[in-house]
Length: 383
Picture 1 (cartoon, helix red, strand yellow):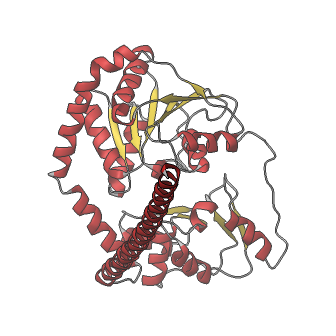
Picture 2 (cartoon, rainbow, N blue to C red):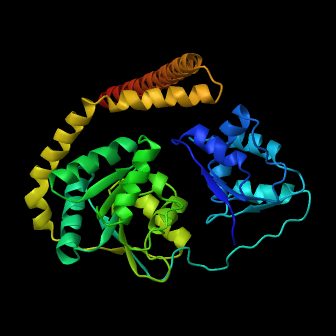
């Protein structure tokens, strides 16, 4: 078609990106934060001739959670013309998207897939019920089993936090598994490098947070393992959607602890499918339990020495500054809120204690009255 395009994402050189934008590409593929940064800091390009605005993963972009794109989207929407076509794509229909549909000035075209099952038929979905403290041993056993039986298989392991992602990667390397990590604490260049190594099968195992649950199209992934049970069914759908793509078969295994049963029920209700139990050899897991626990602890100590948590805090402060917030003021507000919560908790505890004491006193008096009545009855009978 001869179309010129440019990619505008964080972690890359802004000057080079600004130069690409000034060349008036036909298509701009961007993350909201970085595109908004260019609009705020540069006047070398304009979006006034934009004909189409596409929001992919619209549910994620419009939800107000730990990553709020509202301000960035406001900047972008203010820079594009009012006479444009806006297209929103989402794998899950949220309340926010429904509200947008009702607020639209012109009647929007709306299409929703009527398929009852939210996951494809080619995907085999299993769960493995494990005690919380031995979850890592089961994970290592699963990977070892897949590596022994299918050496060419690619595996994605999803976990809940950046820290846990890093620890699991370090731990699996101790067992000589070809693994690489992908999480938001990594620089953009490191993320690209990790993905390139996984896609090219240099590394067969990718350990990732939900930063990789959306948008990644790696057709050759055979297995997805959920190291933690997702808190929301839609997160589960996005995670397991990394396998069984384009008509291929895939396997998804979720490690479920004794505290996650209700989450599994919510997932099953959403996807209209009952997860089947995945069987493993318990003796084999027990034989590596101590070794795995020791390896994890060593990795935790090693990671603590790198000030990983401190780096995360620095990144949070940078993000707040970019959003126009004062980190120190936010910390002060947070401390004050925590203080108020503590006081409220103490007040509730005092009230409960007072009520309990009153109940005990009433019960004591009641028992004393009953005892006195019995004594009088006995005395009368003796007379």
